[in-house]
Image (cartoon, rainbow, N blue to C red; front, side, top):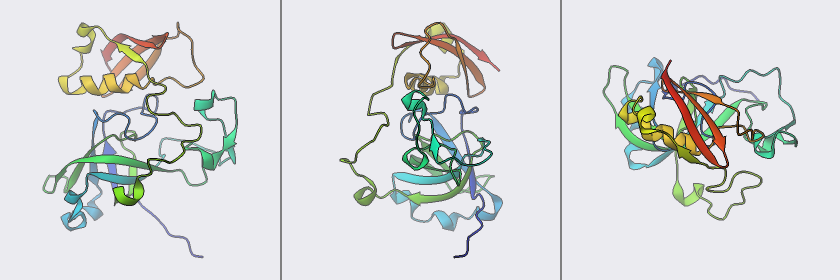
Length: 228
């Protein structure tokens, strides 16, 4: 069977400027807005006709920042402490035969006429800034939603989250439109699942700022917020 050649149709832009700290899955942090800009070849408003009737979209994209020397049939999910191997197809690891990701995002706004052509604004993305997107499809609730589906060893709703303490004077270092997004992101506990050192200080990039924090007894304490 012949294979096909695929190329990016768009790129996403947001405040997730480094791999560390990106939400573990799509839909977990809806307070951060992402902008989808199409490549010149696909800047055609007709391609978006009817999209306004949908509330959510599927994005098919590439783990472009992940460097791999080849795929492995098993991986060590951070969710399991990094010590237990699972089959790659039972995980969402980037280390796979074709490094493609699939994300469900909420469509917030469509702008058909901008200097960059048609632009989509979405929330709930788990893609790093600059990630190439290969396809966009509408989310169909009558067939795509499975409320009774089993979640395997993945996090259950609300599991893996932490309380966040951030002094008001530190939070005010950020522009107002970034504050709630940062707090929601930190509440997801960005640390690897195998790390639980209460004295370790972590650094995370977000929207041009460096965020330093540590976690003690399920409480994440923000120590510094600095402009990079």
